[in-house]
Amino acid sequence: MARGVPAVLVLSGLLSCAVLGKYSAHQKQPLMRADFHAETTLCQTTPGLRRPQVELCRRLPDVTGAALQGLQVAVKECQHQFRHHRWNCSSLATRAKNPYTSAIFQKGFRETAFAYAISTAGVVLSVAKACSQGSLKNCSCDTHKYKMKVAEDLNSAWKMGGCSHNLHYGIRFSKKFLDSRESGADIHSEINLHNNHVGRMVVAENMQKKCKCHGVSGACEFKTCWRAVPDIRVVGRALKEKFRQAVLVYQSNLVNRDLQKNNRPNQKKRKQRTRLKQWTPYKPKRKRGLRNDLLFYETSPNFCDSDRTFDVPGTSGRYCNRTHTGEGSCSSLCCGRGYNMIKQRRTQACNCRFHWCCDVECENCTVEEWVTICK
Ligand SMILES: *[C@@H]1O[C@H](CO)[C@@H](O)[C@H](O)[C@H]1NC(C)=O
Ligand SMILES: *[C@@H]1O[C@H](CO)[C@@H](O)[C@H](O)[C@H]1NC(C)=O
Ligand SMILES: *[C@@H]1O[C@H](CO)[C@@H](O)[C@H](O)[C@H]1NC(C)=O
Ligand SMILES: *[C@@H]1O[C@H](CO)[C@@H](O)[C@H](O)[C@H]1NC(C)=O
Image 1: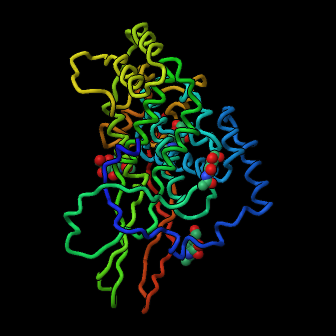
Image 2: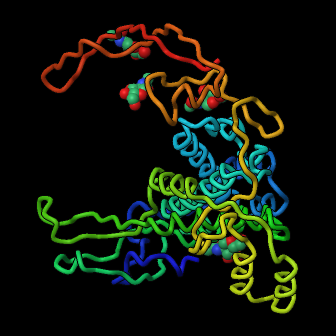
Image 3: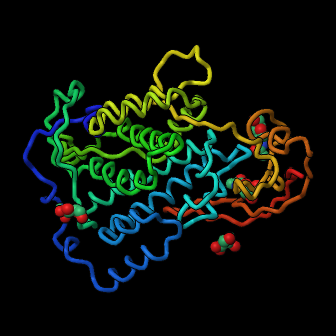
């Protein structure tokens, strides 16, 4: 997978990140006893981990810790991207320790596809960054060589001396940690694996080059550059777009695929190809391949009413926009039940004054405003 990364950069030198101060020997020392205990506790107290995940957690508790943090970042981003939707991702947030325990992960909705992809992306980002911060025992900066288009940089002297986020390791770990949840033996888990793949791909496609200038009095005579993973917001936006265009698939020629699988059991690529062939888009006119699309196999409920079996809270009590149509509007969010108007008090900064130099002093004012809340 990482070989398919759009080549952002090329390495020029042999400089490894070990020369960076950030990556000090101190941080590479074995974990203290207390940390060790904290981390093995993590493996025991995180709910809903499957057996291979627990085993991985025992072997690499620090990396797993970074992965779990990545899941939290992903859930936050999911909430941001879906803040105006009836399903607003809050059910994942309430499962703070492991969003996968939410029933939405057991379904095949469009929202499920997004949840799988963003979660995987969150794990990749978090692990890739943690590696380069030198806080993990099993990985450090990425030292893989990538080809690059250097056009913009031909004129300035720069070298790839910085400590790159370890995309490679992040991707590998996310496969071990998350793909291991899936048996891969049925179409549902194959679709989950596919959506995991889309999450990783979006991270890889959005890798950035970051540089730091060196030189006399801030002149940018030399630059040191490294590859950085994108911000989660960039990933969230890209996946949201894929969410909009997600493809409903149904199962076909399954028998055919099984035969092929048995004939060539070890050919991963072939397996992947047959996997994708086997999913037929619901709208057969569609021409382009499905490899880069989020896939789902169940039409979503309307998410209007609370439904425990899907872990759906419903939209009663949601703030909505009365003067607006479309996403976030009362007509959409309240599902025809109407809304209540409530006067609310809010504190905000006011009468701000600037003091030389450089303070801003504000008073706290209470403002009253009408808000609309779904019945
Ligand atoms: C990372 O962990 C794997 C599996 O536990 C092990 O095989 C490998 O040697 C480790 N690598 C480093 C650099 O510690
Ligand atoms: C998401 O929806 C839930 C349930 O309807 C609600 O309690 C929560 O405040 C909403 N979150 C946001 C950020 O709007
Ligand atoms: C409601 O939507 C309108 C139009 O898009 C917007 O100007 C306004 O700020 C929104 N109000 C709230 C409370 O979000
Ligand atoms: C305004 O409120 C904040 C916290 O809500 C508080 O920390 C601050 O001291 C308040 N400022 C004044 C001027 O009362």
